[in-house]
Image (cartoon, rainbow, N blue to C red; front, side):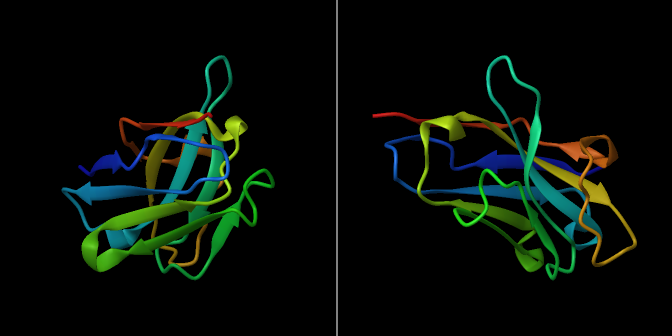
Amino acid sequence: QVQLAESGGALVQPGGSLRLSCVASGGTFSAYAAGWFRQAPGKERELVAAISWSGDNTYYADSVKGRFTISRDNAKNTVYLQMNSLKPEDTAVYYCAADFTFLPSKVTMSKDEYDYWGQGTQVTVSS
């Protein structure tokens, strides 16, 4: 059983930056594809970025492409989301998720395929 714990959420001004971290415990995180999702009030949870467990494949939603970067350090059981040029519309609770897979280059796109979820961390972009 893998447990995921996000951190790094905060209140930040438009144009600012944040780095979210997701630490996994209770399993071999290198066997999991990972993703960052977000959910704003009244909206569905959406995939923001995803990364294969090998780290060689990534995906970004169009709304964050060029501003966000997903990365991972399997030795530290940690996945990161670097968020730059933040906008008010980036305000949401951000969730980390993990999908157990034998495929090292798989990027998991559907939230229904993810096996484990963190509790979320609030990101608020406001002046």
